[in-house]
Amino acid sequence: MLHGREEELQALSGLLSDTRRGRGRALVLRGEAGIGKTTLLRRAVAEAGSDVRVVGCSGVQAELPLAFGGLHQLLSPLLDLLPELPEEQATALRSALGLSTASTADLPVRVAALSLLRRAAQEIPLLVVVDDLQWLDRASAGVVLFAARRLDGLPIGLLAAQRESEGAVEIRELPRIALLGLADEAASALLDEQGWGSPGPARRAIVAAVGGNPLALEEVVRLGDPSEVAEQIVLTGTAPVGRRLRTIFAERTRDLPEPVRTLLLVAAAEDSGRTDIVLGAAGRLGAAAGALNAAERAGHLDLQGLRLRFRHPLVRAAVYADASAQRRARVHRALADELASSPEPARGERAVWHRALAATGPDDRLAEMLEAGAAEVKRRGGLAAAAAVLHRAAQMSTAPRTTPPGWNCSGCRA
Image (cartoon, rainbow, N blue to C red; front, side, top):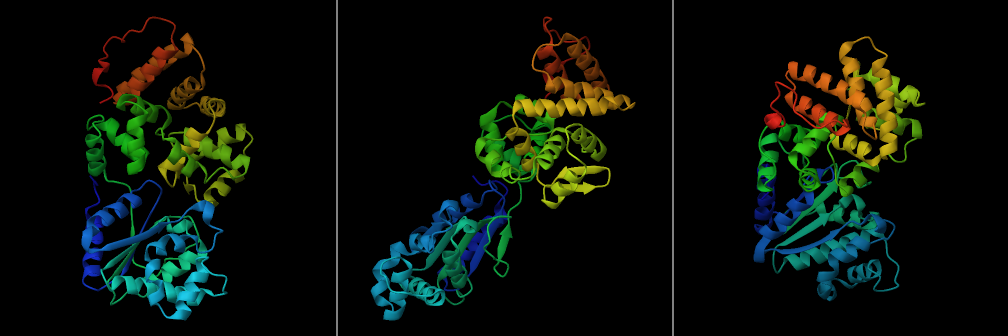
């Protein structure tokens, strides 16, 4: 079931209804990876039923240099109608699709492709579906956009999906829907459907940590039980992400200079978003203050005076998850040193926290300091955070595990 997408589903149904009535138009679904674009395309194909013919193609990043590769995929089911086109149009399409050696140009191919779609739609309304438009080769994308602007009065609907911030396909003049992360209620319904966890602070923290991204939520279900995932969010401020999304979002930062990547990892590991702490810890690792400006220019961070934040929580999660354990430990040690240099008591507690995250083995003294810090966190009302600190303390201690007096941890991670 598609949760929280009622408006989008209504828009798809409207496009199909207009297509059946001969009032063709185009619609582009735009959003980040994992937000549900392909799922919505599949729903539209299923809803088309037997009274609408569907043809489609998907952009493939590796095939970007292949001219008309996407067009070949799109029009292959319709090639039996090619002899019914005017000879010059049929010749142009045969040339573009590699079926002849005759020369041609973009405009004749675009006109011919639209003519072929119109011919196919004479028999039954036609739905053209294009996934990953951002990776469609330029020549094929040109044909798709040419057709998309000329569907008025035709029984042809065109539905495309494009990942935001990627590719060079310009869709500014086409109607589009921006897909955002799921709201709390819809995200919670998705997790209920997966039989994962129960409503409460931990679930809300998980939804916020992935920006309501449906694929990220489904990956989280496979990565651990709710208490483990919630504990990672409490301890590090980031959610665990699966390999697929981690690769997609981490790729945005892998080509940045090393000082900028270091600063981003520090920012990902520092849960308060304090600019001075991030800059101080990054400086201890050799990343100068200019790295912050570069990270902001690259579109990954928003700087708002004393605070900074990642523009998308999944970039933060991917940056943290993509780093090696050794690199994360170095960052947590630098953050601990920076926090410990401050006279503020609260920073001292967080310094202990970061030292614990950097630790690779048992440390009874550190475990005792964590336990004392957990009591203070509990006093301030942070039960879930306090439970996570206690659990980390128990992991680091060589003493038998016991529940401190006055604690009832059975509900701490609710």
